[in-house]
Length: 466
Image (tube, rainbow, N blue to C red):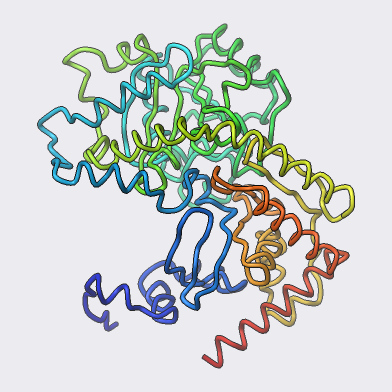
């Protein structure tokens, strides 16, 4: 196959939408290109600021996906750019040294973290932070077993995938890390049944399951989990990759129940929506048991973790979140959003449930049955209805109303509403009104599917003409 030639940055910036799609199709993930193209999600976005994104045709979109929680400050926040400008002459990577900005960041993390969490390891992503947390639990306890929840999502590297609760993502890569055991989410009794065996190093859990469908546990669940883990000598690992940095109305979601984990995992918006970044934070005692002293200090390291620019972006992101009181804004705007969505729920039977906390909200729809429309689309609509049902609604929102959303990976009947924490009431109203119009126009799941099929066929014809 002819592979073409290398492109310069200037040439890349001039790629048309068609050229961009073809590049992904030929040299990247072709299957993903097909899925994105089904509902016209293969747009070329060329500019972004705050809550808004613009495509190559000049159309403006509201972003209610927020990079899966990565852009709490909005797109291209000027305060992050200003901070990065201040360190542009500092060395970014000098491994044989201690970096100034990384030192300032770990001190800052200790200051904002709950309870006695003190020592941080800086890395590059949420999955890598989870990997580090799992290793720490084993190293600190001397035990091997790891407990996780059905429906949970912690990443797709081998360790993180081993404690992720959906078989679809796991089966092609088995055998995974051994001695990982799943229990039902929000079931403290099931956790105790496992931990009383005495061989569990750690229990990893999300305070709210994001990819599981924005599942909120009953009040008091985390407190019970904390007590049970302490009783049996198992480390509690809280994955706050999506819920952290103010998303749920507190800086960290565990603060709603005054729970302090043994290990706290953060990422996504940690880098200010500009630089990929992650970290886990633990106590002095746990860290020293696993990695204390000169003999063990190099057991777990990262080449790029804590580099100057990433650490600077994280420092600026934390400062901005505190100065703007983004956790407080998430709490108040989230209450407003939930009230509006609950009113929709009362008026539209197609909505099964609305749930969430702060500005992490899921709207679950009733299940759709396969039908004759598959014949029109070669089975594509059936696949979408079974695997990506909420994307049918997301497709309507994006293509008709220019509002960007998506479904949750482990529950495809749930559409996630996860905007930047700078969102205003007028923007929230626009989303609610759009959902109301969609559901009024399509009184049933079948009606919505037919509308989606028309959009699909129209988009398919356009692409063939092009």
